[in-house]
Amino acid sequence: MTDNTGSDSSEASSTGAVVAFNRPPQPNTVFDRRELNHILDLYGRMVADGEWRDYAIDFGRDRAVFSVFRRAAEVPLYRIVKDSRLRHKQGLYSAVAATGAVLKRGHDLQRVLAVIDKRPTLVRA
Image 1: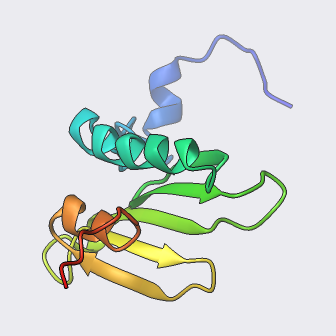
Image 2: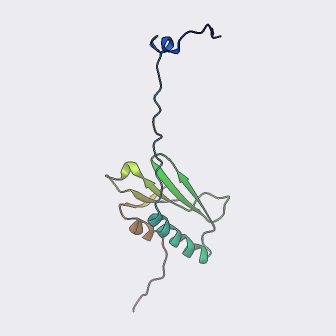
């Protein structure tokens, strides 16, 4: 219990108590508008083809993940990961398959998404 005898509050701070400083919270890693436009463009095409039906976005302190699902109750087919810890090393973006295998990693989101994109290509004989 505390004793309310009218003691000055400066006495409490002079006893060597540790004072916590209010630090601003570290910002989460997020997808910006340009990145989301590229991802949602691919997602829209795959939904129109009937291959994908659901998605989830997760933002963390050092990574942002966009997961796509065939059905909501399943594991994600693909995960598009933006990992800020790898920005100067292997690349900020990566495409990860359902098995956990990294399909492509790089600094350019469009090149990473090209691995997942199944656009028809013209074959000339």
